[in-house]
Length: 285
Image 1 (cartoon, rainbow, N blue to C red):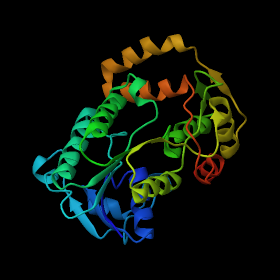
Image 2: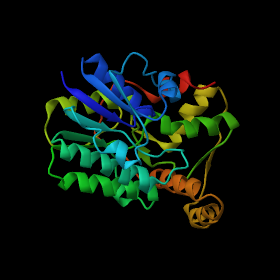
Image 3: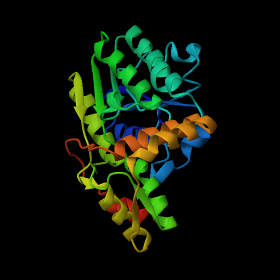
């Protein structure tokens, strides 16, 4: 079995990737900042890394001394590294930190799998521009590269669940469709591609394609409340995001990414067996 470096190992997806690699007998080197945090259960039911990691790489991915030889003595890199709700600059993490890890992989002549986002090259958010910039660099690098593009994770859909608990879900285009994917299903797909060893890019989503209105109703069913769905006109977004950006640029950028996905179809070929309704029911309270 291969030895694999996993960057972003303590995130929602990264934890499932580590668990999937371990279950298949691969040796795992996990890149983490805090081993104690890694050993606790992760967000939205994602697994603890306790007992799943063969070697801990403790440090900051923004430190070039740490990243220089991260990929030494492994056969493959899987990166689920990226900013979610942290205060870090997406360009520093999603692009430059991934680039530093890629440079280590190039130095040690190993292959690289990156989890990007579906349609990110068209989204105006700084977050997705950073991810797309790295994906473009990786695609032309002299390395066997694999780029996986999911539309969204189940964990991203918890914002709808939070609104449902409060009694009102706001949507911008009720009929726009999306098929988010559970972390465990995506991790299995990622490791399948890694083991096959072919270079390329793949779009992949979960088994259920839902409109945002249907998502809202699933969330209300899970929390046991009468559905109240408000359709917000898209014209309110530019001034609202502009005002938000004056006070909290990171929050405004996250909102720009989220609302962009809510305004257009974001559907990929399906895989997996886990359903969002069950995820909502598990995390409703």
